Length: 152
Image (cartoon, rainbow, N blue to C red; front, side, top):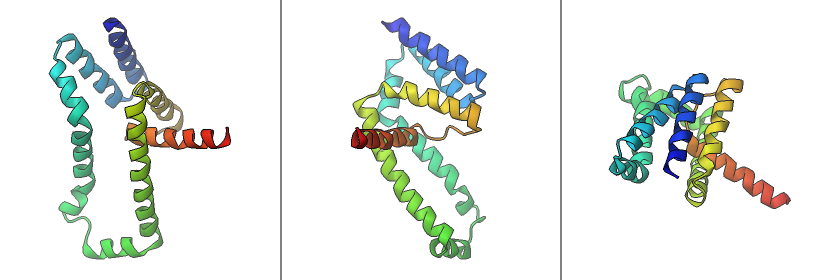
């Protein structure tokens, strides 16, 4: 049913536009164009290397203040020894663990991505959120699933 995936992508494009989530709208639009152009090689590339490429761009963006000198040695030492800095280290460790669980969940059940996107849109519209990480959203969903299994 090839038309169904195109309709879902168009629906996500429209929802993204209505929700003012330009990233979701742009991603859906690009995938519709790739699908209509029958450029399956792009799907293969995105499936195999897209996550790494996206994480690389995200890390580059986050590291810019370090590279351009906005963060100095004193700031780094303070942030490695202060309570907020130690909590940031703990948060980073927990986030990477949740991300790995999210990736595993997405590999086991790729269809879950639609729910993650809808949840991200709700977060944007009703909570003023920013859709930075479907992988983190999947990690949190995996954590919820563990709680659900535990208390079931």
